[in-house]
Length: 212
Image 1 (cartoon, rainbow, N blue to C red):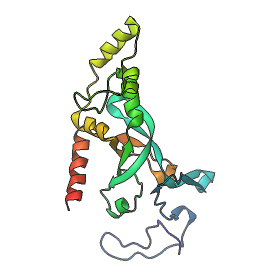
Image 2: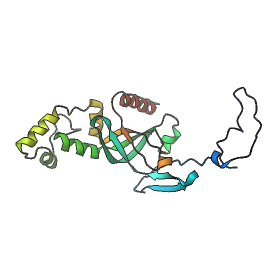
Image 3: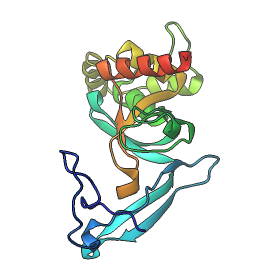
């Protein structure tokens, strides 16, 4: 028995059974779920290509460890490493098995975003107040610039506000992100960094789950 997406085996809304007027058709087929796993221990990604109806292709990701994530308020996207799966509204089992699906909440490495922020605004990010910069950070952030370049950075600094909850995450080295692509269909795990009300909501959910 193959996986079928037909309606003939289902009951009517009234509860009555439907007579099967035809056998299975190719356009009604379904395929096994991809169950894309987070690649741990440097296992690397594994993606299978599937030929679909009309000679088109689907990319079935079986293992992934990186993805492109967008930081909406700063309008930038960076490729970064996926660290862990933290929450899934549909099923806790998908968290335990570290399965990557659309709309699951994951933690990603914040280094590419921090590097961009420090280069763009010439300000440290994720540091406690009064904490001293290392020699390398000092050289990178407070390097000698021309007057014109300095004026440009001074203008940028006026809009360089990062919300406190996000700043705490930068200090920890991990950001919460949501997967917006479908890894089992397109072979990629892309998404966006959580901010604002959405970040508050999922932080509450994760905290409640840990408390159980």
